[in-house]
Image 1 (cartoon, rainbow, N blue to C red):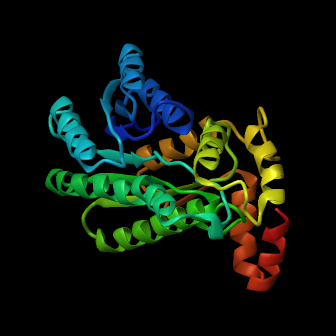
Image 2: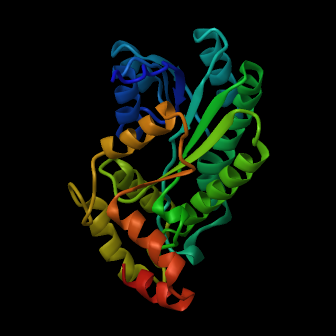
Length: 279
């Protein structure tokens, strides 16, 4: 029997300069889809354009940049965006008691506020065309909290809440909402986190001894923990969410995500806390 032909789509992806965003953009482009790859820095936009992508500059911490990027993307795609992959995000390390209001706000500006502002601008486009798919790149840390990642944990928990609510509210619109929930993935995530740690966390903290070990992990070359997968592992899940007739609500990526999602369902909260403190 012949396989059904994949319907090619126009897909806007945030955070395509490297890592998950770039791997996903490349995979979808190679499969024939029209990919609008966005990046925060102009030099990354230029590089993506040289590689044959439709590319736009987009800084999720800036509302004007978001509005400009949406306008440009629609101009370049004849006013059609079939899929939005909200990939862009970063992680601010540090104990919760060491996070200033400004540091928390900065974490949420990109991971939550900017991401949802972009999504809300594209929902009317999807409603008008009669279909659409919205994919959020969440995290294992949107399912369980881990120490010294409080700002990132909170941003991903918030994103999960928004995505779950939006899915309910979009019922009957022919617009689906999916969450990708990766565990450890090879990317520049740790290096970017280390830079933010140096910028925003005081060295005289009560947690300074613990921070020494955290600094070593953030600077370690290659995989810092077991079960780390390449970015393509996430890209493969996004491909399913884009191409499947019935996209899943949640896509787990890496063994730790499967494990902790299962443990959260079966363990008493105090037992799970004890386990998470050891991770």
